[in-house]
Length: 424
Length: 82
Image: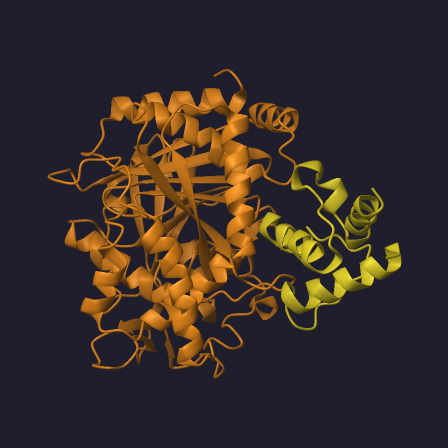
């Protein structure tokens, strides 16, 4: 193993928040805070060949040897490299599924990062194809980190694995001032909003649905966006369209609002990395639960975005999360969970764009398609991801199956697709 | 402010706030290729607003008008002279 990979490293503030979410999932009977990337491999279905290729990656073997240590009193949680060899093993599932999301065995797998590798691989046989599913703990890597990792396994020398300077060096006086400003916005302004889904006695299995547009439909979507003059605000356009379908889903509650955190990648641009750690902060948009047209919704989103960027909310939020990881866990839980009662985490939106467009091979294996399967944001919650691969738009969403019926989610599905393509 | 001067200020801002250390930037380099996203572009517009007292409405911009520092500077100068 290369000497430049450290034997231990601390979690940053965003990672620590993911530890909190992981516990929250498990406390509600979920599998934990686990992300998945499904990679369809062309012309290769041999698990032994794929496995041997994965085991040539020193970086993957290093990640597989990491374990999370959280129990030290007054010490920050750390990842430590466990002594010994932890070769990557691929489990195969050959139930001839229609789609990878139908393979319940994979989506019900958990990863206990204290005792197990935080990353694992499965191979699923779907109609006419094999799909390699990478599952990983969101405590270790965010989605962009995994994209960078998988896109660069053939040449990791180009990758920046760890952040240059992971520690925010700020005096506590400044930290407290920044935290106060975030508190004024996040805690005082945000009142417990609409609860989308019932909070009790729901089936804890998370279901995924995928809308996959053809190249023609994707072009239709882009043309519709152009007619709306969305320009640079394509993500806001997607969020606006989703919001209109969402209002239909929850049957409009005019006097209520919902909140959606939208991640903002904090990586400096022009470099491939860092891979390790959650390198995101968030913007928080207030969404009125009343009938509005798309232009109104988008104008409102744009104003909120600019106003939050003007007040530097994402950077301040990062400082707050970094500072709070030093708090005792009971206080952390109290501060994170109580004031907004889940209002900030029950609906999550992200647009990863076409960030995987350069992904052609993984360790020499030809890639045919890729799909993100994010962890559910918060129990019970609705998580929606927009992504594009090779000119085809996909929308993936996850929800707890017992909290909302499949029929209603299919209505949401149809409504969203109609809105996106302009037939709504 | 002249176009060239706006370009110089924008490059200085982008290099010190948005790009990783050591990444070169020329006025005609593609910002998308460097990984700048819509959040980055709004940060640039807010910088223009703060330091050049010029508001460039985001809804007037498209990919072409924000693809390079040169193109953004053209928009900034256009709005300065309005």
